[in-house]
Each structure stands twice: as C-alpha cells, then as structure tokens.
Length: 369
Ligand code: T4K
Image (cartoon, rainbow, N blue to C red):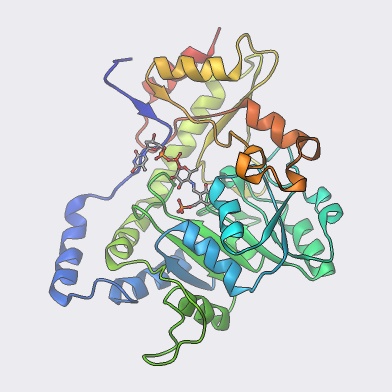
C-alpha cells in the first residue's frame, strides 16, 4: 500500500456538486439561510417519509439534539445509560445537570444489557438513555417493558442507526424519542447535522421551540431554549444525500461481506454477524481481538497505523474510565466487566462506500499471522 495513501476509518460520501448548484442559487436568490426555511421544511418532510416515521425535527448536530431531547421531556435526577459510547452521550446528561448511572453491556451487540437495567433503578431514576451502538438495535422490547413498569422515559441515542429497521419498522419508532446524527463520519451526512424523531405533533412543536431559543411567536418565549437549528445549506445537502443512500448502503454491505469472508476462522479475531429480522446499515466494522491472537489489540492498532490504515478504537477509552467521570459510583470497573473487556478488544476497521476490494484485502492481510 502506498505510503501516501492514507486510509481512514470513515470517509464521507457526497453527492455530485453540480446537483446542488441550482438549489444553492435559489438560496442565494432568496437570502433565506436558516430559521425554518424552504429546504428545512422540505427535508423534514422527505426525511420522515424516507425513514417511515411520524415527525422529524432537524438539528445542527447530534449532540445539541441529545441535549434538547433531555430538555423536551424534562428529565430530572438519574438517567440509566451505557458507558460504551461516544462521549457526547454522557456529556449531554452532564450539560442537563443529570446523573449518569452506568449499566454494563451485552457482548453480542455492545448495547446496554437490558437484563441489568432493573437493578440500577432508584427513586431518582427518570429515564433510560441507551445507544444503538454500530447500528445494532438495543433490546427495545425489554427496555420498553421496564420503562412502562417503572414509569421511565426512553431516549435512544440513535446516532449510528440511520435507516436501521427491526421487524420491518424503523428503529426510531421505539422509545419516546430517538436522536440522530448526520456528522461527516456517519452513514448519512449533512457535513454536521442531526435530528430528533418523535411520535406526535405536540412534542415536535415543543422540540422545534426549544431549538429556536424557546420562541412560540415573534414576542412570546415559552421555554429557555437554545439555538440548535439546521441551516438551509445542510438541508439541501441532506435532500440530495437521500438519493444516494441505498447505493451507499449496498456498497457498505458488500464491504462487510468481504471482511467477513476474509476474516473467517482467524484465531483471536471476532466480528459481528447480521442479526435476524434486522435491516442493518453497516455503519462500522468492529473486530474484537482476544487472548488467542498473537499480538495485543494495541500492537495491532499500531501496526495498522504504520501501514497507513487509520482504524479507530471506538469505544476506547470507556467513558466510565475517563477521569472526569470517575466520581460516579456506577463507573466502577467491577460494575462494568463486559464493557471494560470489549473496550480493550475493539478496533473498528475502515468502511465507507468507495473503499475498494484491494484495499480491504490489503487491510485483512495485515491482520493475518
Ligand atoms: N452519540 C454517539 C453514539 C455518537 O457516536 C456521536 C458522534 C454523537 C452522539 C454525537 O453526534 P454529533 O454531535 O457528532 O452529530 C467522530 C465524530 O466526530 C462523531 O460525530 C462520532 N460520533 C464519533 C464516533 O466519531 P472522532 O473524534 O473520532 O472524529 P475524527 O475527526 O477523528 O474522524 C474520524 C475519521 O473520519 C478521520 O480520521 C478522517 C475521517 N473524516 C472525518 C471528518 C470529520 C473525514 O474523512 N472527513 C471529515 O470531515 O469523532
């Protein structure tokens, strides 16, 4: 592999630039750049149709959408969540003055272990914030049952789960709210971007107000809102990206299948397979390096880097091991054995639509001893 040819874990796909030009001309002409403009409205409608969901509220990024989702449902006290995630999940709780309560994960999906949630509920628990890690659906049925029994809200961090379906329905249809990310590194990007999916019009109005400073109309401010609106450029890009989604998905699926074939039966390397009744988005290709592998996970990670393969250890370090969160009682390693184990084993290999076959073969060759 050429030294100049750096291969990163992700590479954003973009529509042909000329397709955007007429729309950009329209924006330049109208001078409406943001604040619920023509393309914002259109993208909200088209995206909801595309995903098969009721209501979408667009955001400038996923983190602000998470923070706003917690505000919209007026979550208080303790929130049960996973330590195996990107730091934005936990940070959104802290910014809302909420206490994260970490629960261990299930090794087969890397998602919160629903069977351990009950034991973490206290009188101060008001919500559960699970993450569909790598686009693998959480145990939404079990989580829903617990939430109903204990009267808890459920907000899914669905940043990795664009387009994922379970039993033919969008994964965003589970829980009270789902939060999406359209960051450059995601399967669907608007440079930066995000959204909240909700079930009813009333909640959408509330969320729409919160992301626009709390304005109900020109003179009436009904909540201490924030500015988290998606702008017209992001919305135009999003509309155009929808046209290429299935093409990109089929390329991701092929790359996943190639990795799985090439990595079959290698001692010490474990990878994930498709889950029954799940329509996957192949957002990541994580591998897990166990004790049967001849070198350590970190030695392999360094070797890949030396060969210009910039894989990533998503999610290492584990959030609960970050110094700033050590004060939280549930962050204790003994409480989170599986998450600690997996965070020490994981490497996410490069995956993106135009990653060619020979590069995948070169990457896997570096993994075989
Ligand atoms: N919840 C979860 C579970 C999340 O994973 C995330 C974000 C969020 C919430 C928050 O959503 P947003 O607020 O971001 O919408 C990246 C992303 O920045 C972050 O969005 C993502 N999760 C996280 C898992 O990964 P980094 O620090 O690893 O990104 P970075 O800049 O190192 O990018 C990785 C590689 O991608 C680069 O080596 C090269 C390539 N790349 C990156 C960018 C930004 C490009 O080719 N082009 C680009 O523009 O966090």
